[in-house]
Amino acid sequence: MKTRSIVFRQHGPPPAVAHLETRELPSPGPGEVLVEMLFAPIHPADLNTIEGTYARKPNLENGAVPGGEGFGRITELGSAVENFEPGQTVLIPSGVGAWSEACLVPADSLVAAPPGVAPEQAAMLRVNPATAFRMLADFEALQPGDWVLQNAANSAVGRAVIQIARHRGLKTLNVVRRPELADELRAIGADAVLLEGEDLASQIPAACGGAPLRLALNAVGGESALRLAKVLAPGGTLVTYGAMARQPMRIPNGLLIFQDLRWRGFWMTRWYEQARPETVAAMFAELFEMARQGALWTPVEQVFPLEQIEPALIRAAEGRRSGKILLRP
Image (tube, rainbow, N blue to C red; front, side, top):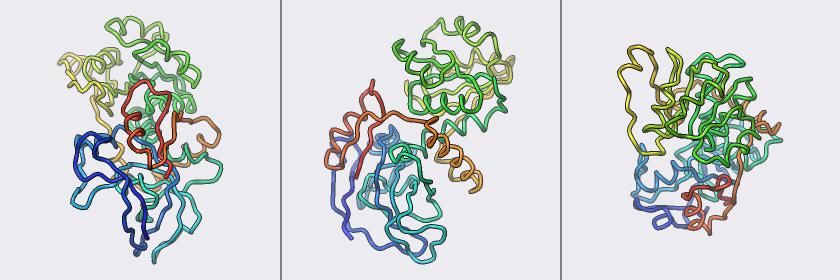
């Protein structure tokens, strides 16, 4: 069958090198399913992949289709596929190219989507909310009432951290660069919002009532990461999952020797590669239920058809958006 996809054949500025093409798609083979794509978000990692600056680079010999996650409907099954049926809605994994009208996907990598979850929200569950979920669950044994500190709190991951933490009875201390974001984040459950700056450490004790901070989440790097680390309790953990400032982190010897801090990194792609199926299933059961209840929600600024990929990419790369940019094949 023929399908239309966004394709890039060389690395460069996404609006310049990514174009809509018609491609031939074979029938699903053993263990594969054909998925008709309904929604797919544009993430910074997608833009980095097209630019050639992401950790993993696709093979461009026959062109590559970007799109690290998406939501679609199964239309055809290959042989030896169990537990799925035509018409079922699913989340597709990274690596198969979600920016397409249809794609072939290994059935064992799919996540079945239950009814009652808005398709736009389902399309964005596999990366950012899952990243937030794992960072809250895997690095410190947090109990209800404990505080979590994070920078870039208005990012998609940051918003998910706020909502998941609230759902679990945790409190969040959120650092942003613009004061107008404070009310917006409090509306989705942020307990405290502070402005990024050199005086951040002096504001934190009052903001969290002097409670110890054992977990900090860093998406910025540079001086911002160091400010988070300096206010962690002894033995606390700083988890880095992004580098928006594109500046290296400095780790002072004293924070290691006298504070015994843990400096960790997190990459959702690697977690999926190593996770047990039952752990993945349990995580999505909670995320789907939160999304169904409206307790986990990612704002969407605009939805573009594939034909408008250039303006979609331009807008996705710009700052100060009101939400994510989605493609609707």
